[in-house]
Image (cartoon, rainbow, N blue to C red; front, side, top):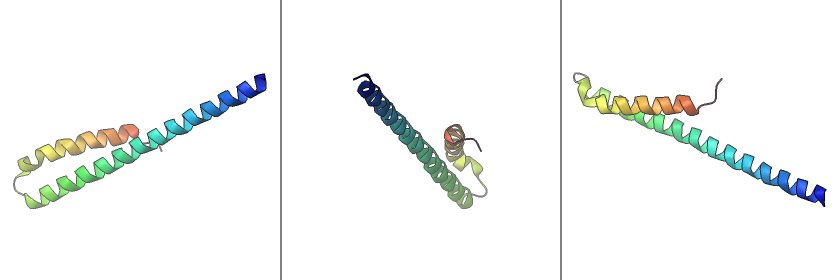
Length: 77
């Protein structure tokens, strides 16, 4: 009976670890996608307004915030 309880407990812990891993992977994927989108939006704005970088300042701040999230959520190399 003890072995059955131990096995059930270990299976439960394995389920928690895989859910945690899936959540971490989803957060990393979101961080990468957000950074890529904000970087592209900033690049387009900069190309369309080469003489007025102030028009792209909000996009620049968004890109920087997304980069910080990306750096925080990305695994170290």
